[in-house]
Amino acid sequence: MKKLNFKVLKTDIIHKGRVFDLKIDEIIYDSGNKGFRETAVHPGGAVVLPVKENGDIIFVNQFRFPHDQFVLELPAGKLDFNEDPFICAKRELTEETGYSSEKITKLGAIFTTPGFSNEILHIYLAKELIEGKHNREEGEFGMEIVSLSLKEAEEKIKSGEIVDAKTICGILYYKLSLDN
Figure 1: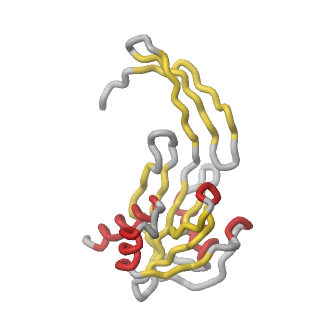
Figure 2: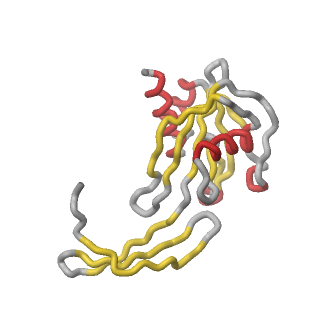
Figure 3: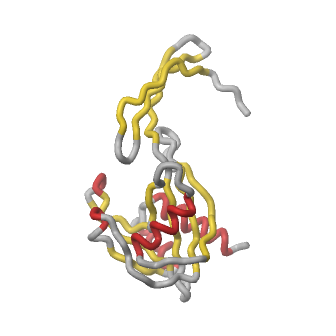
C-alpha cells in the first residue's frame, strides 16, 4: 500500500442532511502546504438487476430532480443506518417494481464518485421473480416499469438513452456473470 503524503489536521461536519452529510477535512501535506478536502458522506445503497423468465431486464423510468428529467435506470435505493445491502436490495425491488425474489445474488459493488463521495453501491441480480404490488414512496409515484432485453439495454446505452452510471455498471456486471 502506498504511503499517503498528508495528515488530517481537523474534520468538521458542516451539513447534516437527509440523504448525505458534508464533511470538510483540513489536511497538511508532507511539504508543509495545507489543503481542504470536501466529502459527501453517504450511507451507500443497493441496486437490483431483475431478470424475468424470458430474459428481459426490468428497469424503472423515474424523475430525477437534479437533472429535471426522467431517467431510465435499474431499481435502487439508499441504505438505512447500518442496513445490510442485501436487505435493501430486496426492499427496493418490491418497493419500486412490485416484484420479489428469493434468488438474489451479489454481482459486485462500485464507488459512484470517489473524487468527492464515499458512497458505495452494491449491485445484485434477482431471478425467479414473483409478481406482486409495488409500495412506492411519495417521490416515486410517477415511476414507470420498463422491460428490455439485454441487447435493447445495450443499444440504449450506446444511443445515450441510458445514462445512469449504476445501471451501466449493473449491465456490465450482468454480462460478465453470463460468461461464467
